[in-house]
Image 1 (cartoon, rainbow, N blue to C red):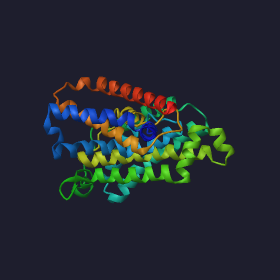
Image 2: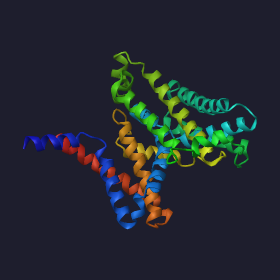
Image 3: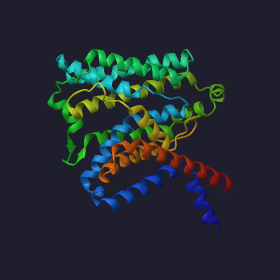
Image 4: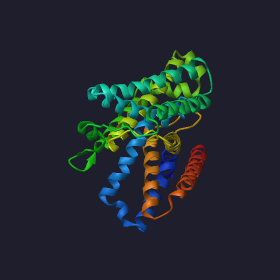
Length: 321
């Protein structure tokens, strides 16, 4: 009896349970309807889609744990790719082009952090405003057209496969996720983020630089959003002004579905991995099941509600046990 109670208590203590169950269920249902779902090439495509979500989803987990949010991710994604491609067209070295793309994201992050943290304005409104501003800048500079001119070496970042099978972006995302999870769970820095999101005043009295931590994670999210834009430009051999459209809501939903609290103080990169994977599985599964793409948002919403309900039940179960 005690052993059973310990198992239930262990499972109930895991935020990721609310994501894992819908993920397993979705995989089973899709496989029954269309067995090609588990074909190697299709699985790799799912992981590839997941990788783009996860690269920005990992730092976004940090941000949500700090009880902040960011709705400018999509615009910064487009900006990073466009800046990199413009630099490449100008004939600059590849490393310089990539650095300029990342710096464009960092610049937005610094500006965003200053308004939110130092000027103490609401993150929701500020990041939404920045989303419109940056999208406007991208549209004006590109005139709504794609920016071409990718070099073969640059294209290899988003298109090449290791051993001819696994896309490099999958490896990049996995490395980023492992590093972020390690920092979050095994370092003082990661523990300080939980403190900032859980009770900022107590964290401040404990000597944690609350405002500095918040600035850092805001900049971090924008830099990695720009990195996603660069990798997407590499994948498609051009930068699209709309490449990041809708990314902010998709990735935020994935992180929340993965068990990270929107109110701060709890979460994990592991849960975000599962959340990103779940959304990628849903997108892929809808195609294989020949369900109209217009149903995608409805399915996402239902899965989100189910995950929240499971998480709530898990917490109730944990409290009882």
